[in-house]
Length: 577
Ligand code: NOJ
Image (cartoon, rainbow, N blue to C red; front, side, top):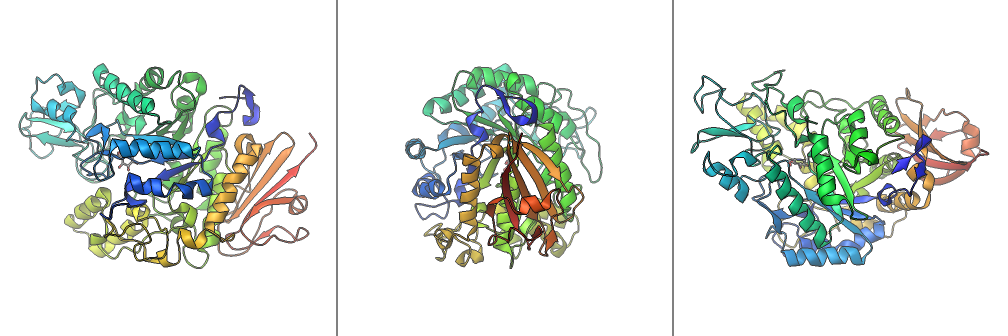
């Protein structure tokens, strides 16, 4: 998109995805059609009308490819097949047709920073030092002067994202392979043009099959600094390799090549790059349409604000930090570039528990959070269950967790001498499993998710928090999300308006305006369970303006702007130019 001052399109049409809302399905936990306790493609198909009712435009399907499921499908052993637990390619085609029949699009998760260690490419690569595919992965000998397997003999000191070292020794050939994630997720070597060609061919195969784009997993990690230097050691045994694999030297070149080889010349696709650690300036480069890399980034700054050195170092959330972060991203991408807007996904705890109130004020907190997010500039993502105000789960002990990241962290911490009772609070707050408990369709024993035994326990609050209970209720979180999505579709100022942050130092009220031509919107959100005055410029005129969305009964237009606990309001007015 070409955009002018204040983000209004300068020439050409606004791209379709700027006014779209994406709904993320985590298939494992969405709907199980065959009673094995694991969600599947036929289950997704059976629930598509929920998405139509909500009004979203795009489905992002987390990985359903053939996989040993070491990292819940983000470890792929065949990019061109469906894992039997989810169904078949024919079932996939049926789902895609059903999605398209309803006027929705579907983007696939694309996980090409790494494969599974059970992918045939890796099996060949590990088979011998002379194998033609040896160079498809990052193989290195032990550190000079050390024997393979000696403590500290790994080629670099990098830690893996899932605890332990980022290198594993292959006993047969005596070399180590790199895995930024689990040992069953070896990193592909994108320096090798054959790897890139194979990935692009696979992507074209999916597009030819009819999918509408890709959500690209950790795509800013595909270019590594080829000399693989050691990282700085802050604490513990390992160094931080991120400076050498996040936004590495050839990442833009690779993404431009991918765009040329795969995307160029095809219409109406969506490409979104998941990019941990990406900065605003880098994001501008990645998403500047003139550079032809990706349409939008999926960045992490705002979901790290309540974390210290690691995600398990849980810190209090401060609203001012959120305003500063979102404000910088809005300003930094105002003229060029595009961002995704999200609170939740399969890697994050539930936002209403994290930043809101999952007790007495759950509905108001969930709707306020949704309102503030969706009224920013960018493309909103709704993660399954967020539209119901689903909460974190009451995990009792380690046996209730399933996620490799959580389970590994616990094992390492306890082995290092920490008491389980000291490790569990951070897991309860931050574990990815909070997002992965089954979708709560109704109040039946397994929430309508499965007729069998779910692979991870259903949240007991499904008796109260569920889609069936909310469907006809205009005061529900579901109804509010429906209105937010309608508003984005109907109001160009939500899509293209400029953004001005108000009250940057107010610790309770989040306030901003959006403006497009003569239309101005004021967005207010109370991030507290107490009343809070919204001391914005021109308050009396705003109180009298049209309230286009709110989560309380409409206030008296003559009353001062005082927000009730967790209240959200969006006002609209037109001004003379
Ligand atoms: C990001 C994905 O969202 C996450 O679930 C996964 O574990 C890692 N990338 C590795 O693929």
